[in-house]
Length: 65
Figure: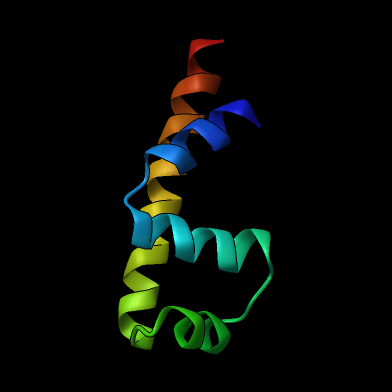
């Protein structure tokens, strides 16, 4: 969990916001778009990039153990 928190803190603000809204708060895509005032396509890109960075950090952490 500490790794995820650290990576979240390092994400660009828009990516962090989308990941938090979708994966932590449980909002659906339309709700997140409304809160952030972004298009659905932009929301998808931001979410994908944010999740990818978190996934890479976890893979690195688990690979080091």
